[in-house]
Length: 269
Image (cartoon, rainbow, N blue to C red; front, side, top):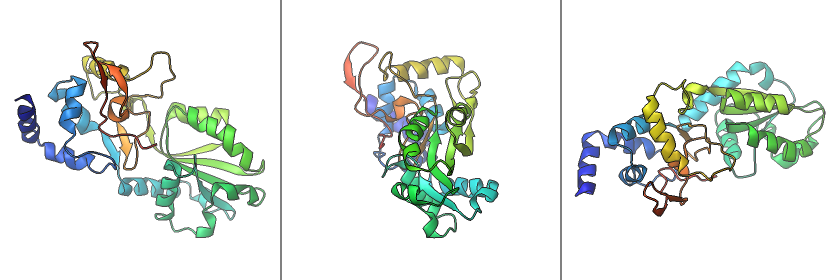
């Protein structure tokens, strides 16, 4: 009976528009919102507020952001020896953004490079690495030190183009590497929904949301969760709330029962 009531209420509240919105995410399972909501224990009023304010970066939005970054930094992209490559391990989000970049900006395809080609580029070349997000900046800094610095020359001038980035993440990268960040959308504390600066939720609502997310975290482990509510059409960053992406995670509910979390947007990378 409860399931039927939930379905009727969801449809009455224009659930079809939310279904259409989340269907743009690769990996979303049709009609999974109600099941996901019931795991959280949160009321429908708060669930609708969460889902209405969640943002999915579709391919058109990503390409629009790329165009703006290039327009804002035309002096860098117009350099003779300027090359573009993906950031991160092969086949992951950096390569997807590189694909979108090469289909958005009119650029000589000889300027698009694979990672293994970087060391053979001319001295003093400008290399622009493309990525989807800089959250805490920790993963970006680690990858630069452990991988990128081993394959580029000291004379190369590196940039990190990121569709979106937090101010702290940008500071982390610029202060701890020799990279310059070219950000698209700045994710200030107003986008980090546990903070006082976020005005989407009341203080009590934030407490409820954070308590559910805390169920899906190992005590004492490093936490990338910044309380973001965003995904890209191909994956969701681990800086977004775990309730959205932590599929198959074993947890104990508020009654102490052992369960497995069914994510609304299972994380691909």
